[in-house]
Image 1 (cartoon, rainbow, N blue to C red):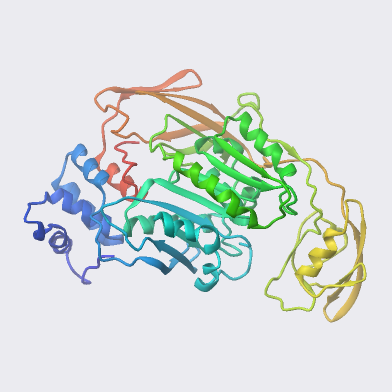
Image 2 (spheres, rainbow, N blue to C red):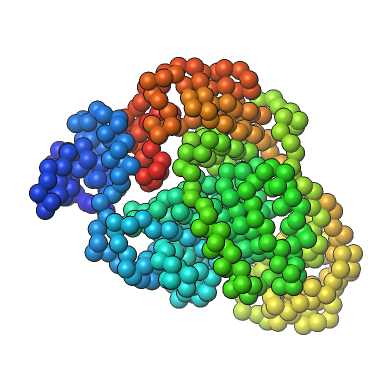
Length: 522
């Protein structure tokens, strides 16, 4: 970050910026506009605003400024490499650790593949430390070191799960910060993770696909994406390719339970590879055999920064940026017949008590943190704060013993518990419910759907329960001297020449932090 001396006037601050970016060592004259673009890219906050103000005062060419943003930063070569211990401050104000691997022979003139790997067990009360994140190198550390990638290992926790906007925001912040410091190839950024991390990579595909080339969910479940409270739907997976693995004997997400969702993705023509791996349980020991296949798959894909198709479906308030499609407003009348219903009904085979436990509780016993509605725990009158000390007569030393006792049960089985509550032992009993089919993605709030296909200057949209949406126009795919036509549900709603807006171009380019996404109008 470049900082000014408090009290400096804008002109003086901008002059100080220009001194830094006129590149006197090269012996070549640098356009003032380009220097100000570099200054804006390097600065934050008030300093960035000053650079933007100065840029707009001295430059009026959209084409020139677009070209300078497409060139991007002048990356320096005196920068840390290897495994780096870093931190990110989330939207909740909490600072969390992450590890970043930068190739030791990093060359700022080259653009590098980047992978973000999200860990499992993300609902724990405390975020992983740098040392604990080091254990996550098992998944992609060696391939990153050998292949010369940039690899980020972020830390999540309860309240910042990957399927919440706090957790997803941490991932996106790490990506933006890495792109500011290192020459990341924006078209070769992938998100992956195991277990909760796999479910998190599904969420990124559903809610934040734009910065990524593809997604690799390992032993996760796409339905977990709804647990953060934002309603996004399977149709959003049409935007990017996925390589998905599940295992036959997984106690959490067995292949048989995931298959209906994979079938639904295929009905939507999602670009998906699904690997149903026999025998393995919920552990990553299949990865050494699977990893070469994943690496081959990754080599096949580059992000198309300006795809000709963009789709979105969800409820009001859910993230809705898909490359050049944004600002979708849900509302109005609609019909369930406009788009095919690909929301499969699932019958869970998992036996669940319906609680979360306090993982900071040292025991003995398992301390109840939350109790789900309409669960076996609620029927048994369990309450937050209860400590489960026995189940069906078996002593519960901690969460492991509780899980073992639950695995022995079947739907419809009765159970007994002894719990400690306010210093007294209570006998409780209940029954594990028989599973009922439920929609994979609850549609509890009014939701809307839009897909848009771009043909030259024409954008043809099909919508349902959507009152408006916005299109970002790039000089890479729009001729601003010609009219732009927008057709919604076979009705022409816009047909005019759109004037490029230099201020919008600069503002959007700085927000996206992406040399391949340059938009001159909205």
